[in-house]
Image (cartoon, rainbow over all chains, first blue to last red; front, top):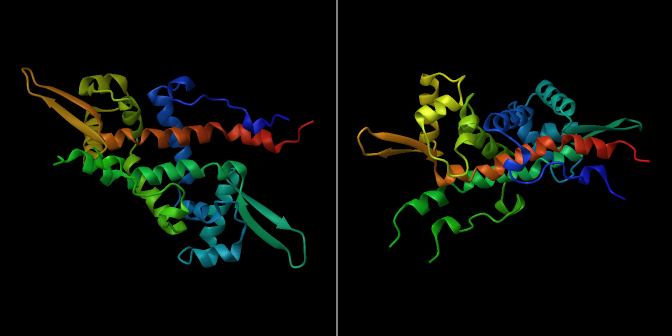
Length: 131
Length: 131
């Protein structure tokens, strides 16, 4: 059966999506706001690849973040629909954090950004004269 | 002949590049800094696809930006290696702005971010029960 999330709403290629330079810039800015906040990207990279992590594990993994700040950043990511909080009803209760499907889908875009940053020297090399 | 910029320095896939969550987050943050500044993304989207644009054309295309701010943002993008300034030695002198090869290579990553933002509703649809 066809799944809703497989519908291709926008064809690849900027022009096909009817973006103007202004609307494209606005779109990217809105996306970047989701990731803004000193710790959000670190949190995301700890959760990619379907990982489910307990609060205490995140605290240990990112020792420089305060408990208050970690709670705040997780809540904002949850509100933005990127992170999900899974409560296991057991004694003592167990709470885990993971990415939503949409949050997981951010991975390729961040990967592209990292590839772009890493390619800088290669492009410099291409500009210098070759023997 | 092999071209330097075609060398694949990092294999695809986060793990192969030896990134930790912290180093990956730092890498993305550095990239985002290049795009920070109220007008940089709009400028970039006006220059993608190899466009060469005169200063006065950019001014007309982005009417809400002041001349001083446009100069400043272009200079920062030039310093970061994203934008190039082409001076045609003629009378009167003609100056155009375009992207460097590296700047042009940012396009796929921004496209991925836009696709991600646009896919939010599709993922929501996937979560609701289907008949």
